Length: 435
Ligand code: URA
Image (tube, rainbow, N blue to C red; front, side):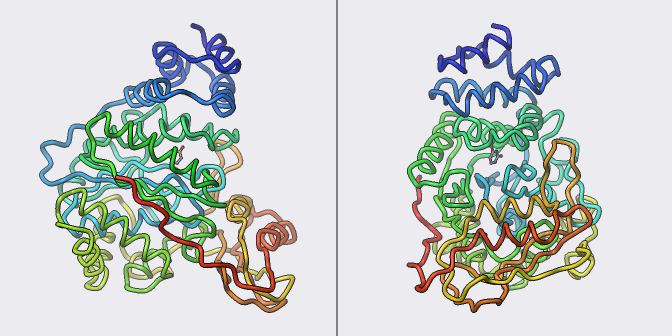
């Protein structure tokens, strides 16, 4: 089938044969299928979906677009974590060094910002000099010698996802279980891992807004991983407000540094400890979850997590001094508060709107080749259930030369908050654990 016929068939809701999916992915990876046809295909999948066999075929085709690493010569359990995407989700930056400090090897292929969500690679690149484009050989050596390495998809590792991810980011074709599942699992299965911990986000800032959709995504991801012989644990976690306070690349790095120094927001710490503990359990370096949590807390308390992050930064060309001294991170041109239009309690946050405001500030992309501004972002001053008086700040904006004007950003952010007379019931951070 030609690309046109494949798009046509999916547009009309037909099930595609595996060889057609493989040919499309191969053509796209090698530049024979242009972006506009692939974008049309993604939109057709968005509306029509895929059955299990099609998702498997798409994942396999994307995985086989590059190499599949064999890390069997690297001693120790190789375990990774992946989040399905959220706002203020900077967990990987703390989790990878913590897990490595506790004895797990972490080969991590991450993504950039996607839609309204931030991406680990953009956050890492806020650290001056940090390189996410290491060749496979250096990736392997760093996993072995340092214990963790965080890179992006490359021309050799998950190249189909590299191109498709960037295309979906700017064509509103992200929120699709088949596309998310194939994107995540093609990267993760290329890494040579033994086990994978999935953080499947659910809520107003997630791609899956409803628990039943998040559960379906978790099951799809886990089935693909287990079908390829990996141990998979999935947690459904709440994304009804930004995680922590910081949204935006350098601001998020600074918050991670606070966390690794023993401080930081409670929700960020709780989720980081839990997901890292799941990695220790999956990697067999802790006998049960309570012991795993204690080991992670200890690696925060005695500074081994921070020291490991510094080692990773140095190994990947970044300025390790920025880890000890966050004032070396990029700083925004200026800041302004967004005042609350009313007195009351924060009852709901449209977290996707907060993420889109960060993109409009320049923290994410409007077009595939847009640069991001590492310094811009939002510091959340009021979280769900917090009391606020009229005129007090809901958040503080860090803006830059490419940011949307202040009135538009302030309107986006003020409009994202619902303020009412009573505090809402506490939003659960952990919804479900699927093993
Ligand atoms: N994370 C990914 O790697 N891909 C997606 O499509 C969504 C989240």
